[in-house]
Image (cartoon, rainbow, N blue to C red; front, side, top):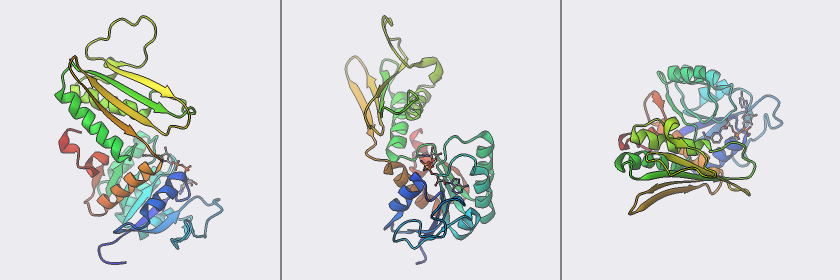
Length: 270
Ligand code: NAD
């Protein structure tokens, strides 16, 4: 390994995201996949965890943190506080993709951020994060006379609506307008709804087939219409975002960051 390369460890390496991230790391210019862990009962413990990498799967996540410059964590909820403690102890840059974090998890990440570079995001997609930042900026620049509508489509198995990402985009637009989304959101329309109220932020939901995730935000005025849209082509979009965050974190100082920092969108109003 040459001087400007970084060792990357993956905890939860045999999971859907773990495997997608290892795949995304193959052939990277400076990041080298070098350590991996999963739970004790996993049948691949002690074996090569991804063909051709030579990295053996361990049960010891602490040693993964100790041996790595950056660790990427997409394990299920419940492990974040322990892993944050390891990041703090070994000053290992820490990328957290786990969703459903508790207040105590966030506090542990804040503490780890005092010793190590910590990047946490509920959505690591580069496109979605850019779309969120642009939505906020557009809402800020375009006044109330532009109606905002957010449309999303997902596969038929999704049980909640609108999607968390659609709500995130709506929150960014509301923030851009300096309003509270809960007071402005219209989540469904049916029957005689009356005219659209100025300042409303509308949501529409489509469900069907195997669509991974599509989001659109429409700004409509009397004279023109501006649309931003994002389409997930496959689930690798989160993995490539996490790898980008790992590359960024490997050469950044300690602190608590999110994807807006990684994409340098904070000055953009995100
Ligand atoms: P998964 O169940 O396929 O994988 C989780 C893996 O972690 C499994 O192999 C499991 O055995 C392992 N694991 C569990 N506890 C562990 C521990 N203590 N130490 C080491 N390994 C452990 O799940 P997934 O679909 O890969 O998703 C994982 C998490 O990532 C979920 O919280 C999911 O919501 C989140 N996620 C986030 C994003 C994002 O962009 N932030 C995108 C996709 C998924």
